[in-house]
Image (cartoon, rainbow, N blue to C red; front, side):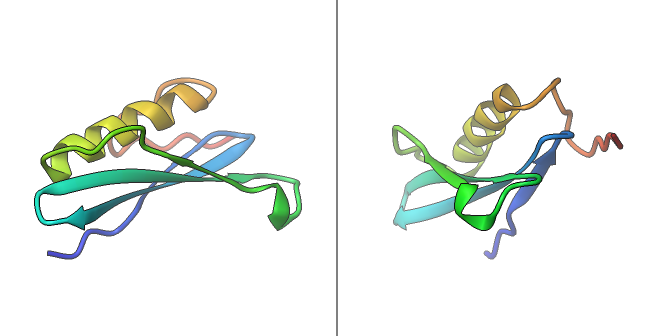
Length: 82
């Protein structure tokens, strides 16, 4: 099954949330932080500190980590214009 990355955004940055299967039954996540108003070399990547047994668990952990980086919590499907 193909999973597309999710995005979270606030007025300062866009986070692109990726969940990848390292090997069967082991998932990790990666967040690409795209800072607004900076050159591409200002972007950074944050990787999960652990592996997860399912895509859903890795995605939930990634979403939680991403939300902590933003100005205000985002809910699934919520969009805020700034």
